[in-house]
Amino acid sequence: MRRTRRPSQNKNTSNNAGVVQHAHRDRSSGVRGRIVPMTALSHTLAHRPLNPIVFPHQLMMEGVTLATLVSLPRQELVGLIPDYHGLRVGDRITALLYNRALRRTVVAGELCVCDGVSPLNIRYDRHALEQFGQNGRFDFSYEVRSAAGDITLRSPTTTLSVMIHDMPERLRGPVVACGSDGMVRESELIPELVVYIPASEPPCVAGDRVRMRIGDAWFAPVELSVDDVAFDPMAKLQLPCDDILRLLAETGQARIMLEASYEVERNGTLSPSEVSAVAFDLTAICEI
Image 1 (cartoon, rainbow, N blue to C red):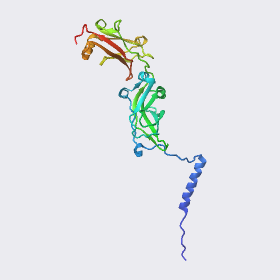
Image 2: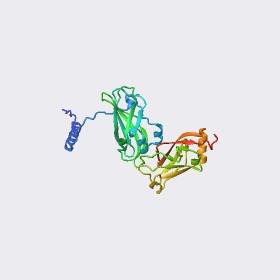
Image 3: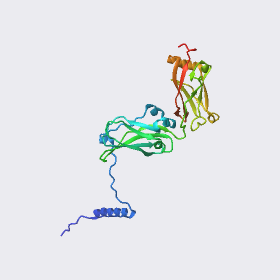
Image 4: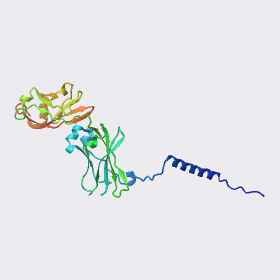
């Protein structure tokens, strides 16, 4: 009589043994299973696209220097979320900063979407911007967590150059030579208009470049030497009379008040000075 061969159980036995051995290895090495819930979902999948943070155009182009930051109210950089697109009342917003060089992200602050009407401003104080300990290009973004806490969205990033370490903190406005009444007349203008650049706080360093502005006119940059930065004022600029007359001719007025300021360039980054007002009265020599 022919015997019927029973199916072999070796394959299943082998697989089960592997499972048992794997489980035994997990226990022996101290590895345990953990439930890992989802904490973020791409905004494209969630159908709630978010707007990026917007900063003033000048900061987008020139970046943030220490002098710029100090000149802002409460020394805070303020970003604006243009509208409530993708946001809902009750959402919690977490402002994030990412340093590209360090590949490190920090939390800069939090706020709540309360009414869907008030402007959404995100404020970055000096401490938040300094905590990386170095200058660089920072990505500004935010996360939105729903009121129910079940989903988190990430906004697009906005990148700014932030140069606040080892930079001048305060650049006092230029001092323009003028008469006792504060007016610039022909006696102060011929042969050149003299402008003094006060020492900065902390002091500038040799190699920094100073570029003067009066009204809409910019003048050639001057590089500071070791001797210059040791004194206050640290520079004496002589602006040719003809250039000032050309500037006034463009305004169409011989009596006019113009703004004067300067920038200090260091390693390709510009730090703006405070602004001084200059009153001109050149009716005696100008035919405008």
